[in-house]
Length: 200
Image (cartoon, rainbow, N blue to C red; front, side):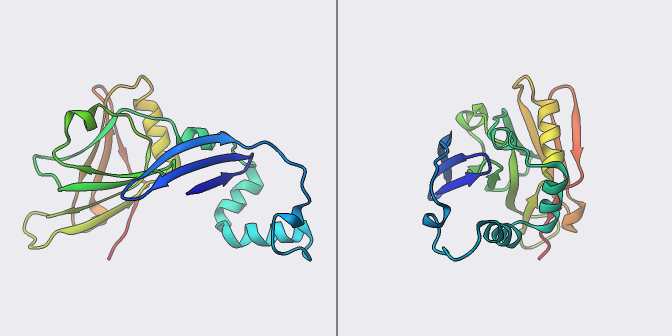
């Protein structure tokens, strides 16, 4: 799987049961007639680019880009690794969690976590999902949590700047929107509040 970002950044992932980044580099600029790169030679370049961008980028993101410009350093920030592990309030854990990271990777972490997994550093999570049996319920509920980019990157940068072990703690509740999500190290805790959860 290949991804291309503004500024010529290219990422390549191998994907299957999990997705792992295998290349991250910057492409060299090439002077090529743009009509040779697409199968739409009769379109004017400016009109074509405008059409594609407005069709593929969410309006709120496009408005932010127009106001603030493209943050070219964000691709490298997505790849920064932190020493963190997921945990749950109390002694009860799901069988596993699925994690999608901002850098395009994804993985399944099985509980109980072994020493190898605990010792690994990993990127900041964009989404975490798991099944959890709430006390008093007869069936496990599926929790799919999407994190706010600014809030979660700020929390990881503040608490994990020295690569100390961070615990990413979940306290599942019903309704799902009442769930508690915290990130903490040995000295400080930040409760995340801007995440969203899929209700179904």
